[in-house]
View 1: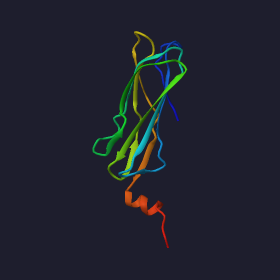
View 2: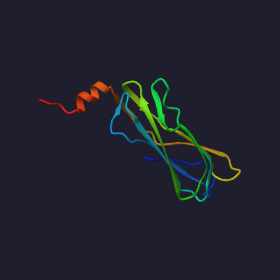
View 3: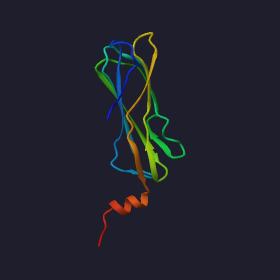
View 4: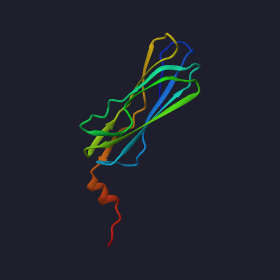
Length: 141
């Protein structure tokens, strides 16, 4: 699922589509959780000063293993895409609402800042390590 965002400024300029995806099948307390952000420029010119910002992971609930939740690109050419990956570690079990990240950019040189959002993975459960092991570890009889 992709979120399309564009401010009415004619057909000229950059137009970005953005997604946010969880790459793990299961989210488990204390285990790495990989997120991928994809941004596609489907417009007629480069998107400038592109900034991705995801403040939906409170530090008391998630540790950052690698990557950054705030990233900038000087430009994204038309008909091209960029990907960004972040590895987090959930610190607690329970339900969590994985919401969208914010993207800002200039659709053309000297234009107004366009603000949009990625798709949102939605609500999901973060399993306790003990529960995950009980369900998925090999059991010997």
